[in-house]
Image 1 (cartoon, helix red, strand yellow):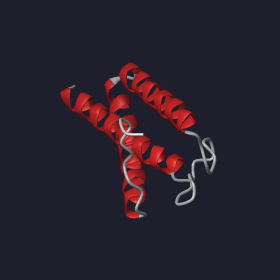
Image 2 (cartoon, rainbow, N blue to C red; image 1 turned 90 degrees about the vertical axis):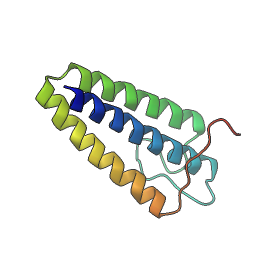
Image 3 (cartoon, rainbow, N blue to C red; image 1 turned 45 degrees about the vertical axis):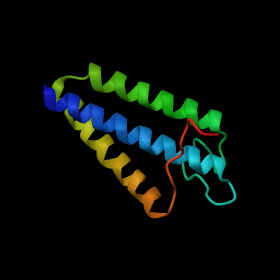
Image 4 (cartoon, helix red, strand yellow; image 1 turned 45 degrees about the horizontal axis):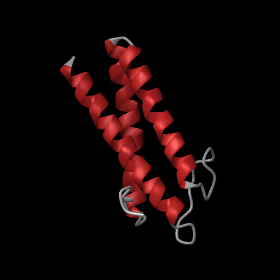
Length: 102
């Protein structure tokens, strides 16, 4: 059971990292564009914040209500996909936005 909680924590971490990178995209529309069709090419900071807050809450809701095996498999998929996105963004030079500095 502890493994599932660690995996859930990791998934939330990579979702937050993706959130910070997407905020950097939104703050620099002349340098970057977003590929997520839900957010659009040049989302606002507010739209990015609402989207990722909903994603994290939705993920936690699913992961914490599924049976153990389902939560584990769901979290493995989310973790792999999100890790890929964060790495691909980082490889493209997209920084992590500091939300405490405007």
